[in-house]
Length: 239
Image (tube, rainbow, N blue to C red; front, side, top):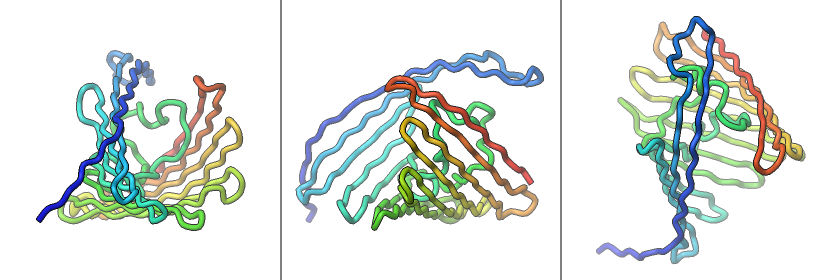
């Protein structure tokens, strides 16, 4: 026997369109420095018979699938989530906490985001998030080639007024390209200003592959409701 019940809820649609100009050193080949990106997002939620809440998201970028997620809110017991190309839990959810008004400093440099502790898979990821006594706990698991990826993160918001501290660890179980990742961060918000520092380490299991260590800092300022400016810098040691 299979029993089910239908729920009804609102589905909201949002979208953004962006034109980007990227310049590099004159020795680099960049082609046309202009590019355009259009993103649409769908989000909906509904209340279950037991009082819990189910929410859903689906994102498209340039008319192609980008990410999706389903989340079950368990109230004081936390949240269980399932995501495809969506970091619903664990280390990848907190891989980058540095504030920015737009893109991060590493986004438009090249196709590889070096020094980032985000090597666990988020393809069909199962996640859990909960907050207990002020401490946020986040877990993530996903099947990977030849193994599985698992990670966790803990974060203590408002350790003192406006200050958040966090730490995460992740294990990529890919048999040919596995990594052990760690990350730690501090984030402080005061009024319209937010600043953060994050240090991440990526240790490759395979011999002959250089490990990576990065320091990433950034600050943002909300001028008003429609304008935010930011500055950031990331350094990566490829040794």
